[in-house]
Amino acid sequence: MWSLQSTSYSALSGWKNDDHGAALAAFRRQSLKPADVSYKTGKIGIPPDALDPLIALSQKEDAIKNPRLFFEDNFSVFRLVSTDGKRGQVTGFYEPEVQAQHFKDSEFSVPLLRRPDNLIALNDYNRPATISADYRFGRRDEKGNIVEYHDRAVINRGAIDHDALAIAWVKDPVDAFFIHVQGAACLKMTNGNTLRITYDGKSGHPFTAIGKLLVERGEIPKDRISMQSIRVWLSQNPDKALALMEENRSYIFFKETTAAKEEMGPVAAAKVPLTAERSLAVDRLIHTFGTPVFVQADSVNGSPFEHLMIAQETGTAIVGPSRGDIFFGTGDFAGQKAGAVNSACDFTILVPRGIGFDEPEVLLP
Image 1 (cartoon, rainbow, N blue to C red):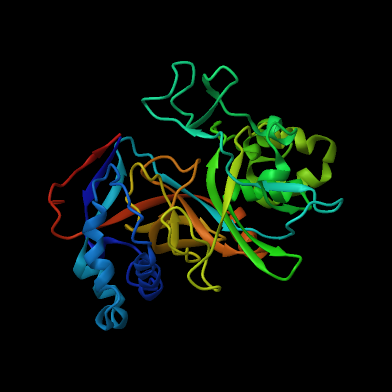
Image 2 (image 1 turned 90 degrees about the vertical axis):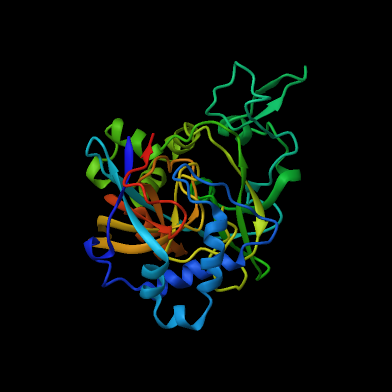
């Protein structure tokens, strides 16, 4: 169990030294959310419409001139504390940048697929008793019954039409796998164009971290596991690589997307462009998108990390009140930074003033 305990800005280590202007710039991007997009209220209880007037206020000159005062004047702070002394965890994610083309040939032969028409979103009304509540998607079989969707291995072997569904083709199955893990990519097309893709559904199977499997099997020491060490292992073990990747049965489908401007980050779950080291992936069942979160992590790329982040993305592996994924940007360098992050952390939630958060504790499951 976790509780939200009232605290003060003066009690937050690192708060005064943070770059509040960078945090404000990420928060201001909430104004780019399309009008037809709505957020759900997370279990913490911050209603999305409570953030709307503050997003508007963040565009004003006063906020831009003094961003720290903007946050302190308009938000109260509540530390997330576990009743059993457990701490949170942060990892990193990024937007891979990979060469691709629109047609398949002998060199570009690995597809990145659109969401198929037969993928069915499951809910409490249509989910059969035979399918676990963990599965969010399924399909109808030849008898019309809803069953589990095809998994990664079956899809790889042609259970659905790759040619009809491919957005683009890449060279390396390992590149494609990590695009699936990250849920987005910046594709540098051979015709000179740039194409961004983002998550648009999945097969429904639970995510399996292949890094954890490699540690359990003694292939990589626990203290050396990272995205980079996993990629090295896959390249050095081509006869085992495909089978290992297919143990992660979850398969991701994509759609084309664009940022408001070319230089901005990818548009993710909150439907706004992400900002490097200021956008945070959270458990969307607990946190409301657009909420500022002050993250205090023990070590991120060799240094303490004390940054005000904005909840703007989610992820299959991001589960729990104090579990986060820091966005590091686009390309290989961002990937190197993201892949090395796995740190204990503490979350402090910034709650809009005046919405009834006067109670000293709010218990979370």
